[in-house]
Amino acid sequence: DAGVTQSPTHLIKTRGQQVTLRCSPKSGHDTVSWYQQALGQGPQFIFQYYEEEERQRGNFPDRFSGHQFPNYSSELNVNALLLGDSALYLCASSLDRGPEKLFFGSGTQLSVL
Amino acid sequence: GENVEQHPSTLSVQEGDSAVIKCTYSDSASNYFPWYKQELGKRPQLIIDIRSNVGEKKDQRIAVTLNKTAKHFSLHITETQPEDSAVYFCAAHGGSSNTGKLIFGQGTTLQVKP
Image 1 (spheres, rainbow over the protein chains, first blue to last red):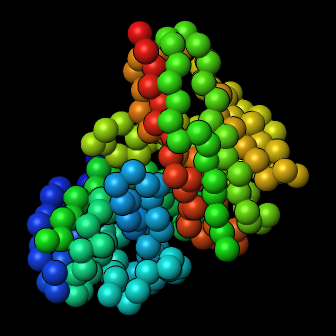
Image 2: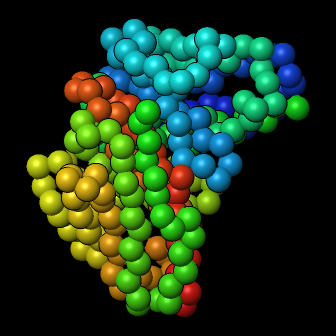
Image 3: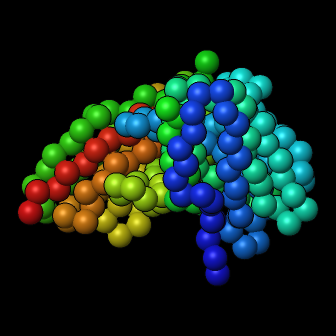
């Protein structure tokens, strides 16, 4: 049983560029949430996708957008990258939108130069 | 706004001793409190969780206590082992029902000295 998988594992971009991160949820899960984890900090909620719609959003600008596909996989897009966007981006999956038993992927380490 | 405070930021104990990490939350509507362990370069892993209708929960050497009145919850690790060394995060459910938002604390780096 595959857990949450994310790609790529590492990414280097320059300011102003755009990036797309991908996530496949744990088998049987239908909800995907994205978190940003800056170095030495706890994860911060970006948004959650359920039934292919953004159901809840954290305090992140519109440069951050996402999508969920019919197979429950998800993408996180960030436009007009800033240096401050450098962080570990974690995808987490769960069942039925609830926070219980949230399973995290290993993350994508994004560096913006 | 929603906030979770976690203390201490670092904790060093001798192998076999107990470790306690404390968190407070601000949203009185929060009803679910998980704890995650994150080893260096790895994903956060759920180690124990508690719902607001329970005051204490144990799983082998790990226990969590919750005081809803004080909006305070704690992680207790007994008989610590070197493999317990990691960063531990507490979290609180973001309030409203049917949402998956977790508010995380800042993390506690636990070092268990052999």
